[in-house]
Image 1: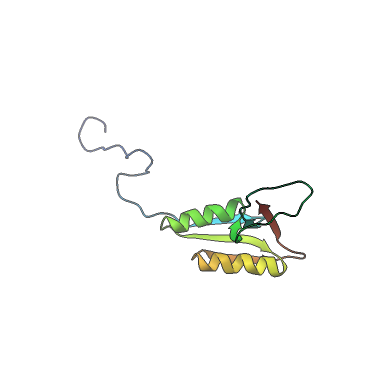
Image 2: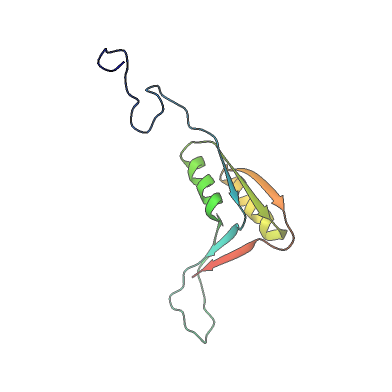
Length: 116
């Protein structure tokens, strides 16, 4: 009953005025990536490019979402296709970040995305 003082609207973004815990999230990534990045002073089209030390990161839309939720203290699990040694490396990197992993074995290799 509005106006009686007994009804209090929910705070913006909430279903009730009470504090709520973050809901667990399950992400699904059908095309995950092992992201490889490195820096180079110069890139020439016909010459070999020398880079500095590489950086490897887990990648793919759902995987990145699970990483953000975990980093922010929430509960998330990443369900993804993982193939070959690149899939195994993806799983190791996610474990090192504390992300709950649910790899599904697949034929072939998990893709590698390269950025210089």
